[in-house]
Amino acid sequence: MLGLEIRDALVTAVAVDDHGQVLARAAVEPATDIGAAALKALDDVADKSEDPVSLGVAAVNPDSSSVSVVEKALAPRYGSTFLKKGATASGTAAAVAEAWVGASQKAGDSVFFAAADHATAGIVRNGAPIVGAHRHAVLVAWLALNPVEREDYRKIGCLEAEVAAAGIVRRLVWRVKAGDHSTVADAAGGNLSAVTVGQILDAARQHDGVAISVVRETAKYLAMAAANLVAITDPDMLVLGGIMATAADLLLEPVHTELTRRLPKGMMDALTVVPAALGPDAAAIGAARLAANPLS
Image: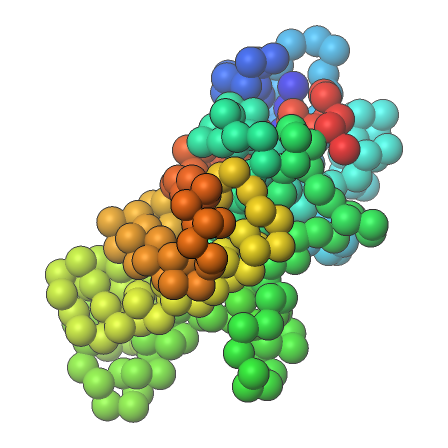
């Protein structure tokens, strides 16, 4: 089984067996042609896949032009296995993967929620993904969590504008430009356009006050979004991915504390909250699973 995830500047491919074990993985940064990058990534793992080959594709936005380019590139070789199914939202694919071989294997109903370059989420109920009437669920990036109207909210969604990588960096840069001193600016050599989320997280670990404040604000937004997802779906388990897993030492406890404040006690007592287990391979693994064994 082959799985492919299309990201903004990276195409990730995996070959997995029937038990979900990753046999091979490859990541290719598109130079100019994302279709060629997808073919290259698949070529790097295809010889590890068992015959007959099935291929699943995931993308943060399955309706994007990048997906269309990849579809055209893959059609001559994989048309019968991919084009009939189309791309799956990355959050849904990751939720399926975590339920199959990851953190939520033992949960009947689970919600996956992650923040990285984008905010993504997926819902699995009784082992099957919930994708909505038009296959757009769950567009968690567009959760409206702030009554203020901003231009970036209208372009990418309120939640994504606050908790995805660019939003976290933006909030720290605003603080520095307003006069607050942060070692993050020093780490970036004074070039605020070069600041990264990793630098902010590292600075928070080293007790930088501005970075800690930005991380705490991020945790509040993340917990508000997670609480909304839990309140709507009432899952057995909430799986937190992206920076909530890779920076669990900074985010897991404050997110959990904020969840406790925002959910009814009975619902919170019945909920298990865990970090995701599959890391950046999750969406590609889930796409492979859905292609070979459609669950929806």
